Image (cartoon, rainbow, N blue to C red; front, side, top):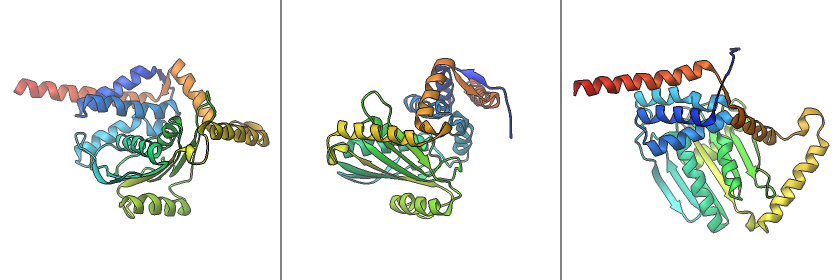
Length: 285
């Protein structure tokens, strides 16, 4: 296993570096800033394999024509409670972010909504999209059909009482046959991606708690339930993983995000090479 002495980088610095890399390679500055924020969120959560370390892969896929930074996702179908999207070569985390926003909007209007995305090259931090829906007061489930073994296929999030971050979990394994069947059936089939081992997909269900009762009451009951379950746990397991992640995020925001020097070098190299290429083109013009 590779070992390294991490370099701590401030959140704003890392996000700006990632945004600059994306923008210099052709992604619109606003989208570059948004995607950089989504990727750095993974680093804040202690998931560096799903964070800015994905940028060299994104650039390589763009050069190969598999991704197109200026592509626009294609709307496949939309009803008051459903939206289906084809990523159409656009960057996966951006498309999933749109999926989550649309699903929440529809759930708030109709009580429940389903969203699907097909033709994804990368998912990024899957539980974040469920977490984001729960931050908006909804209950969310996301299942992924992914080519990235670091993406756990199932994530869920529920709102808790005021002042508490949502309760969220991620589970499964891309190598587990049961979860493979689930991800291919729910994400692959429902999105229209089918049984694909070359591209990914995702399906999301979002529920407005008002369907079951008062939102604040449900959040309070979920908070009480999680506290009771924690009492039954023993040892280090009596702290919810989502609470550990949020505590870690606070520390990373305060003291900097620990980064692999090789990752930082690769990002700087991507930026420098792109700047050199643009400089040479301008001299030839």
